[in-house]
Image 1 (tube, rainbow, N blue to C red):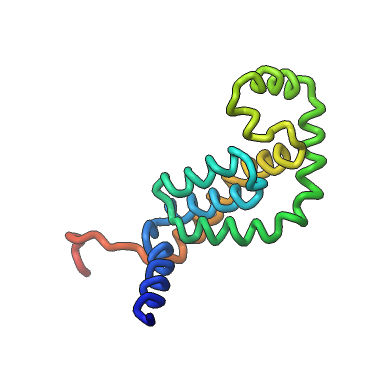
Image 2: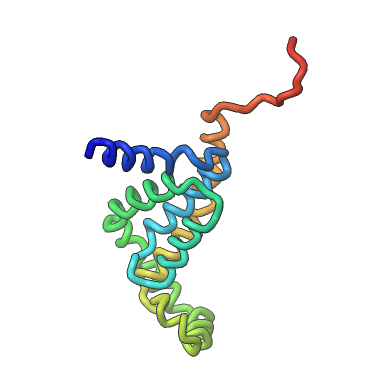
Length: 153
């Protein structure tokens, strides 16, 4: 029994130890933040989960970031909902939505919901800054690998 528990803990720790280059960790965290911001009962969340699992990124930090951001999302909804409402009130967005709603998969994205649209746009805007901050942080913190044939002084 103890071996099963130890194997489970080892598997969880393994999620954090795979793909430890700065760009892998940064991509995992940025996708996790975006996933954490978006409401989970739509196609956008499913695509973000698939991207987290299929792209070469750190899965452990991605899941951790998604969980932590999801805990704080209820406080963020007061910002995302008015943002989505303002975006949906624009004629260009309404025209685009009228065109896209004719496709069957677009209805599953719930982009006509102000909260979903505002959260998705906020996550998309936050993606690059989160990626860059985490990348620089990991680049400074993670140990650098030395070249094999480098001359020693």
